[in-house]
Length: 95
Image (cartoon, rainbow, N blue to C red):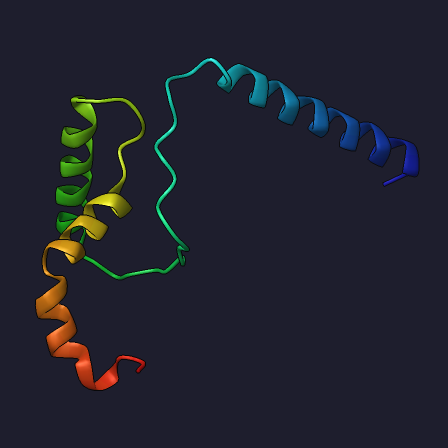
């Protein structure tokens, strides 16, 4: 690809990205940022379990603004059962 074509492509991509950013600016409020640091992870779950988590996320979103968040549903489940989980994992938790 020639330098001119590459430059034109880069400019077009930048313009498209900027347009998407402006178009999304008027949407509803964003979900609040999670407190503290977060880490990304991947989990293997069955499609049925994923559908249940998504359904719960959308049900929670229906009452308010922001995005439906499967991560938020999982974080809430973990917080609800934190004591049990920490007891079970105590030998492997950092001190």
